[in-house]
Image 1: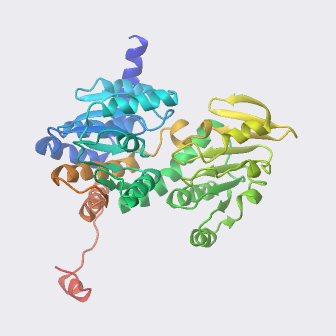
Image 2: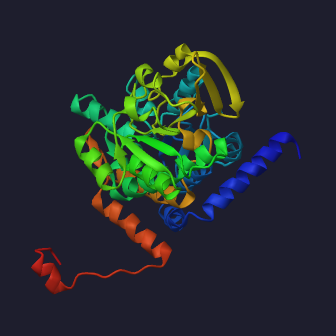
Image 3: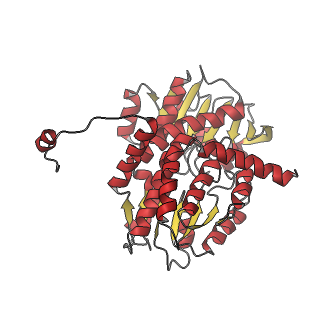
Length: 408
C-alpha cells in the first residue's frame, strides 16, 4: 500500500468510527435515501473538514445532492479525511491542510464555480464571497456558527442579503449543546493534547462568557482549575459571578493567568497593552472562529526572540525574559490541535443542518432574509436524540393543555 492509499485508509477508518456513533444522521439516512429531498440540487459546503463533516456530506449525497465541499479554516482540514471523502461518488473536495489565505479563497471559489443552489456555511466566508458575485439560482442556505450568524445579521439589517439564510447556530438544539458542551470539551482536548500539561491548580482566564465561554469555564472548573472570566456584557458578568467565577478586566487578570482562552467572536481582544502585563509562562489560545482575537502582530513586536517549542506551540520571549506561548497560531485551538467537537455533539448539529437544508429545498422561493430554524425542526432533533438515548419523557394531558391555553 502506497502512502496515499494509507492516508485514504486512515481517513476512511476515522469516518467509519464517526458514522457508527452518529445515531441521528443514521436515522436520517434511510429517510433521505427513500425520499431523495436533494435530487437535482447542488450543495456548496464550507466547513471544518474532518471525519464528522464527511459523514454529513455523505448523508446529503445520499439524499440526492451533488456535493461540493471545502474547508472553513486554513488549518482545520484533515488531509486524510479530504482524500477519503474525495473518493466518494457525487462529492467534490477542494481543500488541503495548511493552505495560504489566497489558496483558501481559491478553494471557496472552486466550490462556487459549481453553481450550488443550496449553501452550508461555517463562519460566513462562502456567503461573503457569493455576495461579491452572481447569486442567481441560489435557493438559500444555513449558517452553523455565532460568527457567521453575526455577519448575516449585519447583511440583513442593511438590506444587503441577496438570498434566504437560516441561523442554525440560534436553534436551541445547537447552541445549548454544540456551543456549551462541544466547545467546552473540545477546547480542552486541543490544549491538553498540544501542551501535555496539567490543568488542575492552574489559573485559567476565559475571555467571553457566551455559551461557548460557559462551556470552557465549566470544564476548566471540573478539571480543577481556578477560573476567572472577562466580559463586556454586565448581565453575562453577573452570570459568571453567580456561577462561581472571578470576574475582572483583562489587563488585570492576565497578570496571574497560566492559561488564557479567547471566545468572543470579536477582534482586538488580547491587545498589546494587555500582553505587556502577561504572566510569565502564559499560554494563549483562541476558540473564536477567526484568528483576530489575540493580537499576533503585537506579540511579534514585543518579542526579542521566537521559536517553536512543540508542534503547534510558538514561544515569544519578551525583553525582560518573560515567555508567552501561542497555541495553533491563534486559530481555533479545538480544530487546529485536536479533532473538534465530540462525535455525538456534531451528530445533533448536523441533523439540524440536514433537516434545515431539506426545509429550504421544499419551501420553494423564500424572500431574502435571515430566518430562524423552524421550531418543528428543532423539536424533531430533540425527540430524535431522546430516542437514540432510549429515554422517554412525560407529556401534558388534555386538561393540562387546556389549563395552559395550549391547542390540543
